Amino acid sequence: MSEKRGSFSGKLGFVMAAAGSAVGLGNIWRFPYLAAEHGGGIFLLVYLILVLTFGYALMKAEIALGRKTGLSVIGAFKKLDQRWSFLGLLAALVPVLILPYYSVIGGWVCKYFFTFVSGGMPQTAEMAMVMTNDGLKETPVFFSNFTADPIEPLGWFLLFIGLTALVVLFGVDKGVEKVSKIMMPILIVLALSIAVYSLFLPGAMDGLAYYLIPDFSQFSATTVLAAMGQMFYSMSLAMGIMITYGSYMKKDVNLESSVKQIEMFDTGIAFMAGIMVILPIFSFGNLETISPGPGLMFNALPLVFNNMGVAGHFIGALFFLLVLFAALTSSISLMETVVSIFMDKFGWGRKLTCGVVFVISLVLGVPSSLGNGVWKDFTILGMDFLTFFDFMTNSVMMPLVALLTCVFIGFIIKPESIIEEARIGQNGKVGAFGRFRQETMFRAMIKYIAPVCIVLILLFSVMDAFNLLQYVGLSV
Image (cartoon, rainbow, N blue to C red):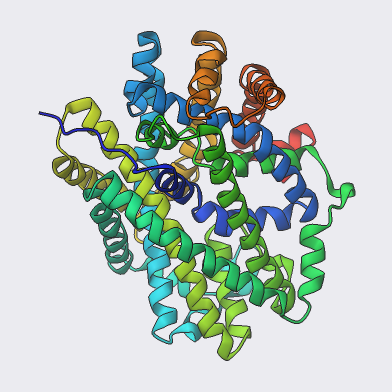
C-alpha cells in the first residue's frame, strides 16, 4: 500500500525548498565565470531580463503542472495526456543521471571545507611544474592529486550522498522543508557576509565596475545564449523538480508570487556569488584565473584565499561552507524528485524507495568519482564520465525536455489550463490589467518565444561541445 502523499506546510516552506533547489553549485561557480567571460555587466543585464521573462514563464508552467495533477513528473504528463507519457519518462531520467555526479562534486566540496576548517588552506594552494597542452607550466596540484586517489574521493562522495538521503528519508515536511528553512537563511547570511567583505578588498571597486556596468561593445549572440543557458541551469528547470515540488504545494498558496520569490532568492544568490568571486580575483589575481567548472572553485579560488593571508583561512572556510549548503539543498531536491517518481510509479514506501535510490546513485556515481583518477583514460566522445553526464543532461536532455514541455502546454493542453491553475490562491490580489499583462506574456512565451530560444540553446550547446561554433562565426 502506497504512503499518503506529503505536502509542504505552507507558502514559506514551499518557497524555501524550491529556492533551495534552484540555489546550487551553478549559482556559486558557474554564474561568476560566465559573467566574467562574457563581459561582466552586459551578461548580468541580459541574464536578469531573461530570468524575468523566459525563466518566469517556464517555472510557473512546471509548478502549475505539478499542483494541477498532484503527481510527480511521470504521472503528471500521463494524467493530462497519455500520449505524452514519454515526456514524463524523459524528464524523470534527468535527475536520475544528475544526482550521482552532482553528489561527487558535493563530496569534493566537503573535502575542501574540512581541509580549510582543519587549517590545511596552504595545501590547497600548492603549485608544481606540470606538463600541459601549453607546455611546462606551474599549476595548482592539490585538486588533481586528490581526485586521482582511488579511495578518498569515493569516501567524500559517500558522505555527501548519505547526508542527502538522510534528509529525504524524513519526508517532505519534516525533512526537505525543515532543512531548507534552516539552511537557506544561513546560506543567505553567509553569501551576504562574504560579498560585503569582498567590497572592502583593495581594488575591489574596479571589479565591481566591471561586474555592474554594461559594456554594450561586448554584447553578442553568445552573450545571450550563455545567459540563457545559465538561467536554464540555475533555476532547476526541465528536470522534474519544480513539477514534483508543485505537486506538494497546497491550493491556497499564491503560485504567481511564489515563483517571483523563488526567482528573487535564486538571482540574489547568483548576483552575490559574482561579487564574492570576481572582486577577490580582481584584488588578488586576474580574470585569467577564472575558468569553467572545477578549475574555478577548486584551483583558482584557493590561490585567492591563500593570498589574503590570515583572513583567507576564515573567508575560505565560510565560502566552502556556503557552497556545501548550496550543494546540499540542490542534491536534496534532486533525490526527493527521484524518490517521488519511484513512489508514484511503483507504490513503494519512502524508506524502501530512499534505499533503492541511494544504491542506484552510488553505482552510477562511481564512474564519475573515478573518472578524474584511475579511470581517466576511459572517455566517451572525448569526455570523462562526469563531463559526459553533465553534457548529456544539461546540454541535451534538459533543453529537449523544456522544448517538448512548451509544445505540450502551448498546443496540447493549452496555456489556459496553466493560467487557470495559477489563478487559484490569488484572492483578487492581482488587478485586471496586471493579470491580463501576465497572462498575455505567458501565452507568448510558452507558445512562441521560449521554444525558439530553447532550440538555440540546444544547438549552441551541442556545437560548443564539438568545437563547431567557429565554423558559423561564433565563439565562447
